[in-house]
Length: 101
Image 1 (cartoon, one colour):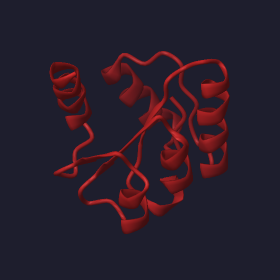
Image 2 (cartoon, rainbow, N blue to C red; image 1 turned 180 degrees about the horizontal axis):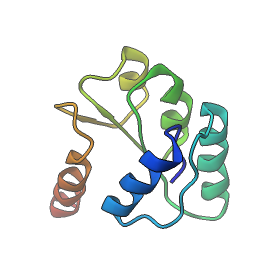
Image 3 (cartoon, helix red, strand yellow; image 1 turned 90 degrees about the vertical axis):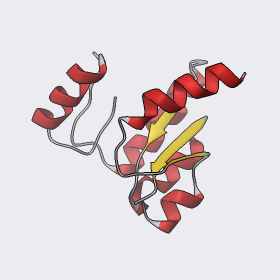
Image 4 (cartoon, helix red, strand yellow; image 1 turned 135 degrees about the vertical axis):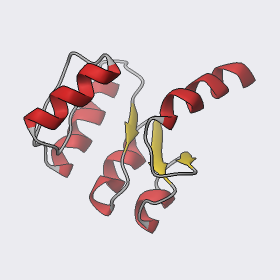
């Protein structure tokens, strides 16, 4: 999980989400490179972000996710927009997508 957040925030978020592979204080360009590298390894990539500097990475991800409170550029780059400013809605969106497929 690459994030621009500090190590402390990344570790707390990763622990709650069950993510063990963490990289903190990542620049937007590095986020995009991580998305592309993961795709080259035949991984499917979902990326969540809500500000303009996430737009490129969101656009490259297989699934881009933003909140309804995100910037216009970020919202235009994603396939999933959560209707409120809480990324915990990703789990519910994931369950809904599996139920409809």
